[in-house]
Length: 155
Image (cartoon, rainbow, N blue to C red; front, side, top):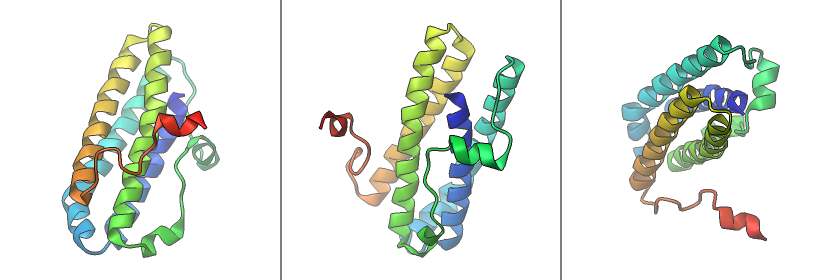
């Protein structure tokens, strides 16, 4: 499960970079102020989780093919032509997708009594939720507007 998280962090940081270069309007200003912080944080988490897993004898994705296989974030080069707010909301939805994997990984880490991993994942989850809330407010959305809802699975 952590392999998915690692791949999602890498791909998401690339998507943030793309949005920073191509978003227009208020979203461009938002991303100019916060985008580099997101990228820096996600790359630091990427490095940290890789090292944590390797230190514990776990396998990690290391090739482009593995990152493509493990990520659950969708990439589309045409996203750069969408309005800035749409690009920004796509990043929010990616953050939300990451929370699904992180929540499952926390449960697995606790079940395996791997507290160091569980604590680090919990910290990452809290940071991502903070970024979702911040960006949803900027976009003028309710906190969970347009994001995954478990009730959607009940059909």
